Length: 167
Image (cartoon, rainbow, N blue to C red; front, side, top):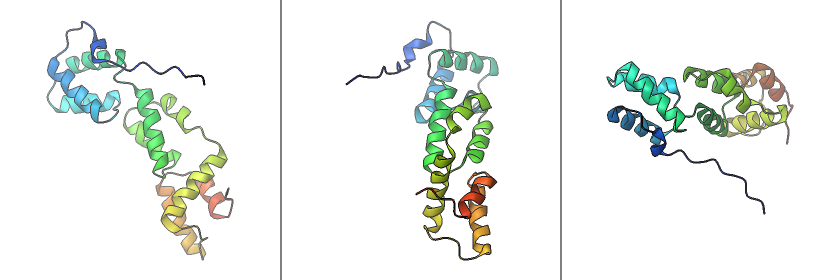
């Protein structure tokens, strides 16, 4: 069996010989230990703690160079988590934009086939409402609003609610 090459794990020692404020470094690493963050998120959180903007920027540059701050990794993990929880592409994209990520980082992770999106919308729908079809137009509208809130595109919602299911 052929083993796939693994990504080299980032190391704290990779921060090199830069002169970094140890308090900023420690705070940033503590935040990154809990979950992936975007550069914008870390910058906001660290400046809110009273650290100087220039020193924060230098520390974040070092973390990014060391591979400890990776927005591509954030996008990949966040999209996978939100898809698993039943959210659609519109909401996920908006949430990641709110974290300061560009569409160039987001879009590759949202490229799924129409069949995959229909399966995801069906899973979100069935978890909330069960597999039975809506009894009337009012119930269909209610279900449509739920799926829209979850971030699925209107055309996909319409196709799903009008019976285009992939079993």
